[in-house]
Every structure is written in structure tokens, then in C-alpha cells.
Image (cartoon, rainbow, N blue to C red; front, side, top):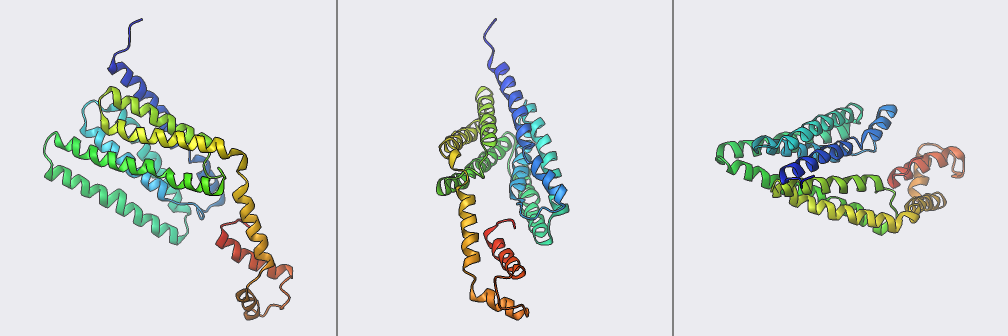
Length: 273
């Protein structure tokens, strides 16, 4: 059996990248099943889906400009469709404030910024330079996207909890970055290869953090429970005024009052009551 050519290796890694990327795109499905059952997206953020849609749109446009980029076009076309469905579901079940915020994000990033880039590229950039220009935009944007896990990693180190950094997602993101790095390497496309080096490094770092802190995943939950307990034991003067203004009995240990006050404080702590 002969050694595979760079073209064949690029096809293999590109195909694997499509498969893994598709699985990553499907990762939020359980979240949207919860939203559908609750008939509300309150408590969830739309920013990741707006960013993911922007990234897929940029790479799709890059793939359309670049010759022989079918594997880039296929997965990002699918990604655009999936992210649009997520955002539609989010908007259907979002409270009015979150709905308005999400629509503004879509208009700014997915419509305004993307349209502006297309106008500049088509009217002010000529010939082959268009691929280079869009590629640079894609590379910078993807570097920013791959840097996003830094905030989660900082939270893990601070709280010593991996509650918000599941190992499976970190693993698949690392695997995805690896596939696309080798694809970019074999087709000599640094726009694809270089940002995925960063994605691979951050993915490895996340998995290492998970292994270090996996046995301490309850620390943040315990901290919140402790804060709630202290809250119940130390009701403020504002809470007392609140009960008096509503003609409630002054005994703050009654079940009805405690439930009202506990719900108010829990909203500040982002704890479900």
C-alpha cells in the first residue's frame, strides 16, 4: 500500500473535520430541548449562537471565494442552518428584554458587519486579493472565538469547579481543531491551520484543568448554598421594610415571608428556588 498523497490526506482530515464539527454543532440540542419543554429561554444566553453563526457565515463566504474548498463549504452551510434554527427557537421562547437584545446582536454582527465586509471586499478589493482579505478576517475572528474559553478556564481555577466546563465538549472541540489543523496544513491554507493551533492548545488546557479539578466540582454549588443560608439568617433592613410596606406581619420567620424574600435574594445569586 503506497503512502497517501497530501491531497488524499487533506480530504481524509477534512471529512473527519466535517463529521466532528457536525457533532459540535449539535451539542446545544439538549439545551434547546429544555427550552422547548419549559417554553422559555430565560436564563440562557444567545451570544454563543450569534457568534457561531457569524463564524460559519464568514467561513462559508471564504470557501465560496477559494477554489477547491468544498469541505469548507459543506460544513459551514450546515452550521449556518443549524445556528439559524437555534436562534429562531431562542427568539420564540425568549422574554421581551432578551429577545430585543438578541435581535440587536443579529442585526449588528450577522447582518450589518457581514454586509459591510462584503461591500468592502467586492468593491474595494480586486481579484485573488479577495480570498486573502476574507481569509484574514476569518483568521482574526476565529482567534478571538478560540480565546473565549479563557474566561471559563479562569472561573474553573477560581472556583475549583468544572461544573460549567464539561469534559466531552472540551474533548470534541480539541478533536475538531486537530482535524482542521491538519486539513489546513495539507492544503497549505494557513487561514484554516493557524487559528486551530490555538484551539488545540486551549482544548488541551481545558482537559488538563478538568482532570485537576474534577473531584472538586461541587465547590461552587456549595458556595452558593452557603450564601443562601447566610442570606436567610441575615435579612436586611430593606427586606423588613419590604414586608411592612406590603402589610405583612413583622415576624420574618413565617413561611410565606421567607419564601418571598428568599426568591428575591436567590435571583441575585442566580440560584433556582
